[in-house]
Length: 134
Length: 294
Image (tube, rainbow over the protein chains, first blue to last red):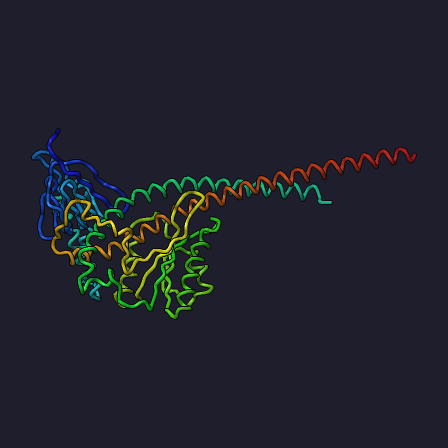
């Protein structure tokens, strides 16, 4: 019997993006990153925009950016529900920078709270994306 | 006696109609396959969302001060009906069935003294409902599947619905769509969105997983994030099912139309041949009788 692994699933509303047994995943939780190893205590957490790191052995085998969502962890499974998910290598830095720029302009042009909130959210998202891309 | 030329024209026009309907059938079949794949691909997300919500609702729903999205506003005076139909017709009874279901419900509610508001998704639902419920329609979304049916479309609807709910414009929200059973059978369905009704919530999911969940940051916080998201997901699910149903309905409608056109062509051809034969016989009779008269 091979050593224990976690079933990691990443699901978006449109499709199942990733489903694989891995040694460990690190998920950016609302209150800080948490690593999931086999036999983790069951828990549900919200996910902030950030990078999910998938480990095989001690190496990071894959890094996926998610724009927030939810994570459900049980002893043998870790499921992340995300609306937007991208491999870190696929992030288009120039496009994101443009988005950030646009969002900042939106923020200064915003007339009501709703528009300001939307712009702030977009700024946070774009900054997290840029951080992820390095 | 019908003119030979007229018959010929009719045959050729029915033939070209048949070509169109059979092409539409093939297009619908191709689209149906894609729509089905899309609907299947979205299922894991909706399922897991439901599982999480089920366990959360079981633990947090009993507490006082739980989100009104979960337990309702305590009234049911104003109902919002989201009627999801197609943008285009020529798909048999598909649109009418959904609209009929919604109309029955709306009439029943009005008779019971409730206020009804209607949100139309898809051009056909608006067109059909506008006749009898013009003043009840509060919003519409058109071009649902153009260029493609994405989650963002569902989010748009969900955002508007949530904004209306926050503003206290309705108490109960129900979505109408056609559940895809098979190519020949689509069931018009009404699903209640607000307050949240867990499907099969009886089978406590948390227990079957072998443990009660910990919540981070807190169950109320997660629930208040998850519930609005769930609305969007449920609407998206309804739209996907609807999309598959629409193409299924159109496929069988066009199949029928093609077959009917074929029958019509057969009948017209027989009539054409008979008429031609009758003409020839007539001519012969004329020639023969003319000769005998000499």
